[in-house]
Image (cartoon, rainbow, N blue to C red; front, side):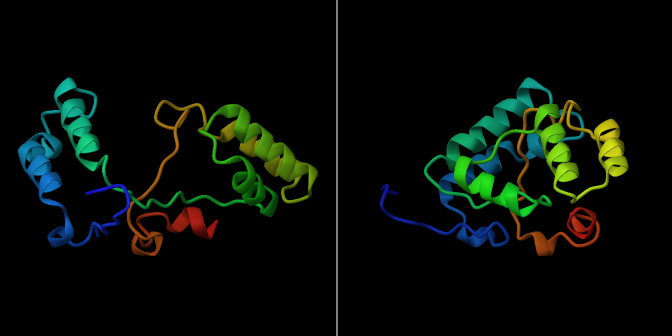
Length: 146
């Protein structure tokens, strides 16, 4: 595929997947689904990096689902997204309190109870690769509702 062509890969329709990607997924299928090979093992990492390499020629659309205030949307448009850290969360909460979006007591509770420093959240951006509406109540329903 050259840099000017565009190919749609619909994750819900494996018949649209490129053959090179299918070959890599087939090769690593057992490892990726294994209960014995954990996500922190070198074998699992090798399988994931093989998939990453196979996807390099393609663009993937992902959705980052979060509740944002209008000023946060503008900031992302102007400056891009930043990875999660305790400083970002503290700044977001502080601004929400200062602008009246949150009460001081709610801001204090969120500051004390957030999970921004946890191992699988800090320093990361998380995306889903399906339309968020497909997630349903067991997926991202609470995030978008509250």
